[in-house]
Length: 213
Image 1: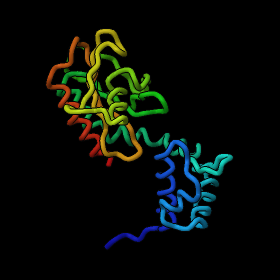
Image 2: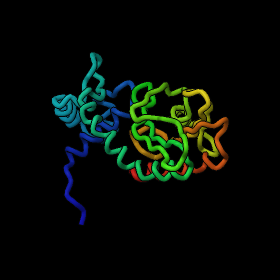
Image 3: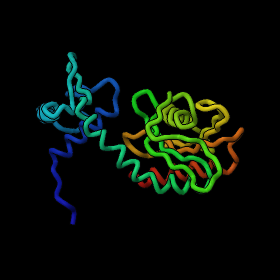
C-alpha cells in the first residue's frame, strides 16, 4: 500500500531542487512551466519558502535558493560521513593509505571524512576539515572532471605532489547523486600510485554513492 503524501510539500521540494540546479535563478513563469502548475500555485509556494528563508527573490523577480538552506546543510555532513565510513575503512585497510571523502564547498574541496590505515608503519596525516582549491589534488580534480564531463575510463584521477611534497593521490568522483558533488580517494607517500589503487578507489566511490542514495 502506497503511503499517503503531501502534494504541496512535494511541489515545494521540487521548487528547491529546481532552484538548486541553476546558478541564475528561475522566474515564476519558468517554475510554472517546469512544475506543470499555474502561476498562482508557484507564487504561494515561493511565498511560503521565503518565510523560512529557503528561497529569496532578486530585484528582477528571479527566485534563488535562500540562505536558510545553510542551517539545514550543517546537518548534512555528519550524515554523509556516517554513510561513507564503512567503504572508507575498507579502502584504507586494503590499500594501506589514508582514505577520504571530499565534497564541494563553494569553490573549495572539503574533506568531510578521513580514515587512516591501522597496520602501516607510516602514512599521510590528513584531517577532516582540510580544504584546498578544486583544481589542486586528486580529490578536487576528479570532481572537476566529472562536472565538465571530461572524466574518461578508467574513471579516476591521479596526482603527485600537488598538496604535499612527496605525496601521491588517486580519486574517483561520486556519480549519480543529485545535488551532491564529491569524490572518494586515497593519499599516500609514494612517487607513483600503484596500478591496483585506481580501480579500487572507483569501487569505493561506487560503494559510497550507493550508501548515499
